[in-house]
Amino acid sequence: MISSGPSFYGICTYAAGIAGNLFALVLFVSPIPTFQRIVRNKSTEQFSGLPYVYSLLSCLICMWYGLPCVSYGVILVATVNSIGAVFQLVYVALFITYADTTRRLKMSGLLIAVLCVCSLIIYVSLELFDHQSRRTFVGYLSIASLISMFASPLFIINLVIRTRSVEFMPFYLSLATFLMSVSFFAYGLLLHDFFVYVPNGIGTVLGVIQLFLYAYYCRKPREESRLPLLGSHG
Image (cartoon, rainbow, N blue to C red):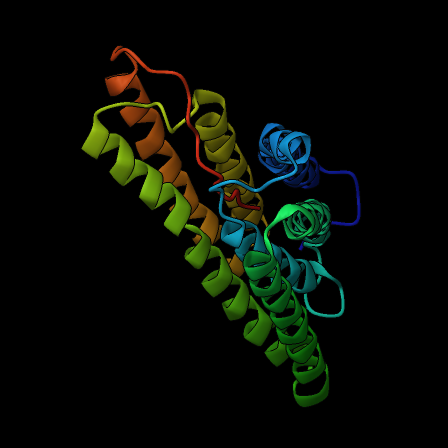
């Protein structure tokens, strides 16, 4: 737990959490150009909205974990994921607005399912668990949700190796992912919070791999970007 007094330890912990929030914001705003294109063309074209539904679920679960009624002293986990949830909800809403009828119905159903699952998690954790067991229950759910989000970085890593090109892996996004993961890894370690430092430790390793791949393949000539609609993390 963070000391209530102004200490070097407390300052470092708070700084790590704030840094994680700032780097996460870079990831949250990164899809804006894609959605500007969707709004401008009034069509979702061949883009997929699934990563944003998954990101919304992850953000909501992690936000719940960071609140005082579940965990003490990790409020910066709640802040970053509440911001992330707002961004993901806006992206999903825009996707539903401009999708064709079939995809609109599918995405609407998934959005309702996500909200129902999160409501169920909140109800069960409040009604069936005391504070300590609630933290453990929601903590493992948050780890599971974050690990599921690693499908995106793994897909990109595989794509870069297969195509021998960094076309689909912008440097600033890889760097932001790495810095965000490192920040929250440090935040979790300083707070001795297993449920924060484990998933972000995995994210840090994936971030390092992406940066090494970028350094290795960045000299290869790139064609005009055709970056697919991919999800981010928090």
